[in-house]
Structures are given as C-alpha cells and as structure tokens.
Image (cartoon, rainbow, N blue to C red; front, side, top):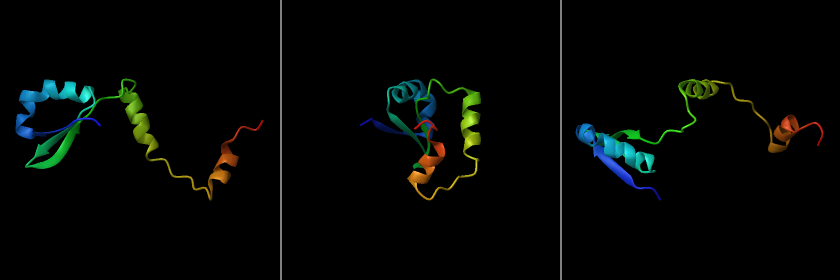
Length: 82
C-alpha cells in the first residue's frame, strides 16, 4: 500500500519539492484547505502530452452505446474470421 500524506495549503510552498518526489515514488499527497481535502499531487503518466490529455477529455463527451449483453457487444466487435 502506498503512503498517504496530508499537507496544509500553507505548508505547500516550503515542501513542494519533497512532495513531488514522494508522489513520483507512489505516495498519495492530499492538500488540505481549511482542514478539508482540497487537491492532490500525483505522478504523471510519462506518455501523456497535452494533446493526449485533450483527446482523453474529448472521449468523455462521446455518447454511450448501449448493448443488451456482453454477447451482443462481442458479436458487434469480434473479427470476421472467427
């Protein structure tokens, strides 16, 4: 299980370097504002560029396709030669 750290917003500027390193090593860093969870620092996917980010965000707006069952979905996407 990865470590979990809570950091008050006021302490963030003094600790940012060590928190970024901890997040890179797998720790969950939660920034507190007025004692409540407000944001988090987490490692980035090294394959993620700004263009890739916007592509993923645009996929979230695609309309969902409903299928009655897994079998009907598989019939729609399976290769023809099977």
